[in-house]
Amino acid sequence: SIKKIFKATLVGAAFAAITSTATAETLRGASMFDENHTFTKTMVKFNELVGQYYKGDVEFDLRLNGEFGVEKDYVTFLNQGVAIDYTILAPSNMARFAPSIPLMDMPFLFRDLDHWNTVLSSDVLSPLEKELSDKADIVIVGYAGGGTRNLISSKRISNMDELAGHKMRVMGAPIQAQVFNAIGAAPSAIAYNEVYNAIQTGVVNGLENEAASLQNLKFYEVAPHVTKTSHTITVRPLVFSGKTFRKLPADLQAAIMKAGKEAGAYGRELESREDGIKLQQMADAGQIKVAEFANREKLLDMVKPVQDKFAASINATELLSAIRSK
Ligand code: MAV
Image (cartoon, rainbow, N blue to C red; front, side, top):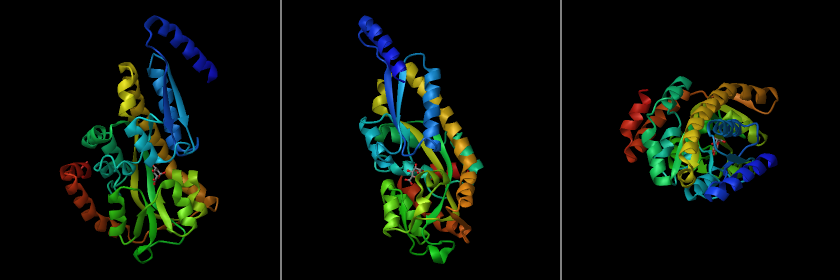
């Protein structure tokens, strides 16, 4: 609020007069969605918690509705330390900066929500966090996510025959295209903010996404068929630019780490609980038609060798077995 900023400025100015250093920190965040999406709610929660845990002055400037672009832009901004300071990112949108990070959101990585929860409440992913920090200068402060990704298409895709040659958009990481190729589809990497148009103009016939984002961005208007392949349970790190993070006072860094864990847990609980509810809401409103995929087990068998090969290529064979055996 203006009042709060004014107050913070006054306090800052008075203090600066004595020490000539202290001013209130303003941290800018970005969401591709409006205030109803779980990512936005998770970041709002994060802002509140940091405010509680930090004794000094901190302001948050969270920009919504893709004002700063989409995740592939955010990752560049965080890497360079420009435009924004924090956001929530799909690991598969960070591949350009840290090739191994998409391992954490490979399709068919998690057996079910219990497995996903166990992995995210362990520290098994820490080698990937380290690589992200070393190579991309991006710090993971918590884990949101918890949506289940399904096929979303303009035509019905409910079995292997209908999937064969199906033109669909995937996220930018090569492993995503490899997985969907392996199951017979024809994937192409398209920026998220171009997907709606690409479907409308027939460049592709669909995408894969989770209920929260399907509902928020209304992809169902051009792709009303949802096929429950349930191929991915999302892992969505809440991330900071290392360049910003290092400049912050130690007690603010500590508040961010604590708030990040808690806001992430809040977001995971919310999104995983609402996932089925949102699908039902869209079905009830006549926005989507939901079908089961006839051969889900078969997809799993086809994808496993692709996962193994990817893990081997990034020296993460042991890590992949550690995740699988959780
Ligand atoms: C969903 O909106 C989210 O999982 C988001 O993190 C991804 O970037 C997006 O899908 C996508 O498919 O690119």
